[in-house]
Amino acid sequence: MIDIRLLREDPDRIRAAQKHRGESVAVVDALLSADDRWRSTIAAYEHLRAEQKSLGKQIPRAQGEQKQTLLARTKELSAQVKTAEAAQNEADREFRELAMALPNLASPEAPVGGEDDFVVLEEIGTPRDFAAEGFAPRDHLELGTLLGAIDVERGAKVSGARFYVLTGIGAQLELALVAASIAKATEWGFVPMLPPALVKPSAMEGTGFLGQAADDVYHLPKDDLYLVGTSEVALAAYHGDEIFDAETLPLRYAAFSPCFRREAGSYGKDTRGIFRVHWFDKVEMFTYTTVEESDAEHQRLLAYEKEWMTALGLPFRVVDVAAGDLGSSAVRKFDCEAWIPAQGKYRELTSTSNCTQFQSRRLDTRVRRAGRTEHVATLNGTLMASTRTIIALLENHQQPDGSVLVPEMLQPHLGGRTVLEPIT
Image (cartoon, rainbow, N blue to C red; front, top):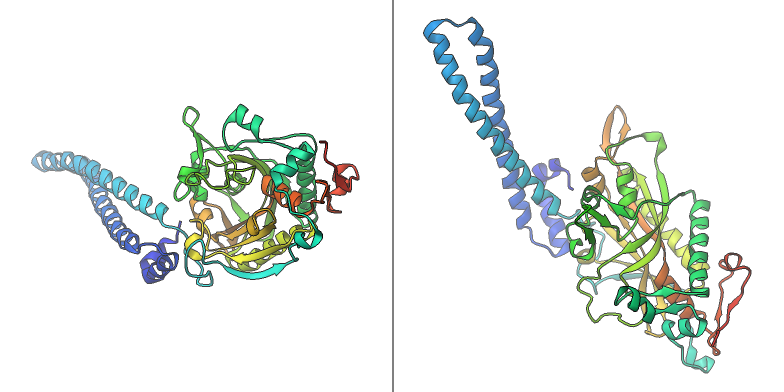
């Protein structure tokens, strides 16, 4: 949610941000009109309430006809106050709905355009030349079958399309990735967390996932709970309605959780294997800090992701996501895209977003500084997304016989294994 003062004092800045995202500016004008109506209904209600209170003091002292006149006016006022209160509530509801639909103000530094208009900031590592090595790379599903690591057929039998089962070394590999990523995050100063994967509507709305991404979330109507698509939701709501002391910030968490996504709109995309699935596990970094420090923290989260990708021995590139492709809560987002040999292209593996005060305004998370409170900035960053990381590891570290070399960082978490051997 944006700052109402900004809407009133500098609506052109919000219009410019909407244009930068490639979205309509009409919502800004609608918001301004709704704000005017809301403020006028408040004034009307308060005027009537003031008269009502004044009459309440006069009636005990009035006599005869004057008292009857005051009583009659009191009766009229009672009905008018109820009407004015209803009008105020309706205006408040209308304004809130419009305000909640408005995305965060995209950073002017984010590239202009949509999904394909990202800017490559750097490339780290060099994709292998399999032709020079004398063999064609297998894709992750073929490798996973050889290793006894991935079973999509039985996953579909159990749960349907876009589900899978990690078996044997596949299950061990994911657990090793979880252990290694949590160990890394702890080393960097993050507090490990295991939050719920089911959250209230207020948590989903507070983080912005019931707007732009509403079609992609799973809802349990009987319980009115949502399955999270990322532990960012639970971590952002964790300190809702709280006020931090300034010296406690920055506060950093790293959470492991299962993640659930409908993958709405992805029909026919990435149907082979486990690249685009309805469920996967993830380790997510999350930071509470001040707005002034949020850009520096964003770079810090990106540096951690780059360190992690490098430790896994993956060739990757860093991209600055275009404004039109940002999530509703982010002002800027960086993705780390790993090279996927069988696809012959880079694909997103991690991302980090600066959400400034968008989520904290909705969840009312503040910090006390210099005798006043202000909303904090929140940031998130993927450290390890299980299925895509497994894909990148298998395909980039495969050998001609179908075996897969294990990065040094993961070896202690896999009983000292240096190579994963085919079982068939």
